[in-house]
Each structure stands twice: as structure tokens, then as C-alpha cells.
Length: 300
Image (cartoon, rainbow, N blue to C red; front, side, top):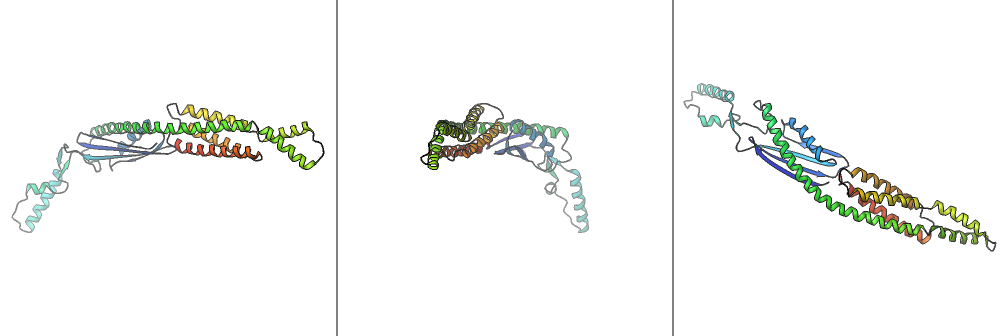
């Protein structure tokens, strides 16, 4: 199911932003984007998503920045190296000015934050990484909660649309049931006319005509297909009222409904106007089933 959400957090010197975007997918596919050096956080993030999302393509992005409240660190070894290089240059070129402390502190790498959004620094201890992991997890859970709210709202709208389509299929099935009840009489009439054309004035045995008509009608009988289609429609309607993971069950039911509709359409030729009416209804059922299949891709 489509949705977007994000959450922010700022503590322990870190400013976090977690973004979630989900789109339709038959299975669960999670893609995680995190800054280089923080790969240790990824397994827990994936686990949290799997606990809340069971179907769909999910893009998870973690943005990390040093918060304004983060402390500063001075790399004394690097500063000493700069000073040594400056002193060597001063003596080599006979320069009088002494190194200025402010200028030294502005040199690259001398002053850093207590946390870095780049690769893990050597000063990044396990305890600090654990604190950051807890902060990321809390932020991700908040984003997942907001994503759930958006998806639930979309889900309510989706259910209304699916129930309308299911009702339409049920109504069309009921009309097909009424038409199919008249098929035996139609076959008897058509067979009688055909035999009279072939035999001319020779007498026809009414019992024999009825038997042959019954055999032909049996071959074109769609009562079983309609009964199964009706059953699948009722099951579908019950499922979309339930909670939990129902997407794959709905997929299966729609496959079965499509199969029954195809079989039904294969039996309609030869029924005259009734056959045309049945074909029209069968095609409408297939169209409604296709619409449902598109919508079910949004359901977990």
C-alpha cells in the first residue's frame, strides 16, 4: 500500500531524520539507505520494518547530522603535525611570524565534532553506537506509526471501492443464474427446429428430442461455475472485513474467480440472445475481477 512518513529526533549530539516510502508490491521488499560507516544499524532497522509491514516495496532512508549541541574534539596529533610542518617551513624560508592559534584550529581535521556523519571514527565507542542505535530505533518506530496511520486511511477508502466491485460481481452472478435456468428450454427449441429442417415432414419423437436437448444443455450447464463464483464472492466479502494479512488470500480467490468466469464464457456460444447476454455479463465480471486484482496489490 502506498504511503509516506518521516520522523525526527535530536539528542546525544545527533540530529536524525527517518523517511519511509511504501508502494505496491506482491511481497515485502525493503531497501535501506544509511550513511557510510553506520551499517551496524541496518539489521535492527530492517527488523523493525518487517514487524510492522508485511507486503509492499519500502524505501527507508536515514539522514544523520551533527546537532548544534554536539561537543567538539581537537586532534592533538594532527595539530602537532601541522605545527611541525609550519616550523620547518618557517626555518627554511627564514620567516619571523609565529603560528597563530586561530589559524591552526581552522586547518582541516584539527577540530571535529564528538560525532561524525562520515565513517565511524576511532573515538566512536560501542556504548555510543548503542545509544545512537536506540535513538534511531525510536525515531524509526515513530515514522512507522505515522506510516500506519496513512495506510489505514487509504485502506478504508480501498475497502469501500473493493466492496462496490464485489457487490457488482454478485449482482451479475445472480443475473447469470436466472438466464442459465432457461438454457434447457432454449436448447430443446433450437434442437427441434434444426431436426425439422433436416427431416422435413417426418415425425419427431418428443422424448428423443428432450433427451438430446438435455445432453446438449448439460454440456453447456454453468450452474457449477456460478455456484463456485458465488461462493468466492461471499468469501472475498468476508475477508475484506477482517484484520490481519489477507492480501495473498484475496489474490488466490481472484485467480479462482477468473478461472470460473473463463469457463463460463466458454459455454455460452449457441444460446442465441441468451448466450449473448451471458457473454456480456461474463465479460463484465472479468473486467471487475481485473479491477479488484489491481486494488488487492495494495492489501497486506
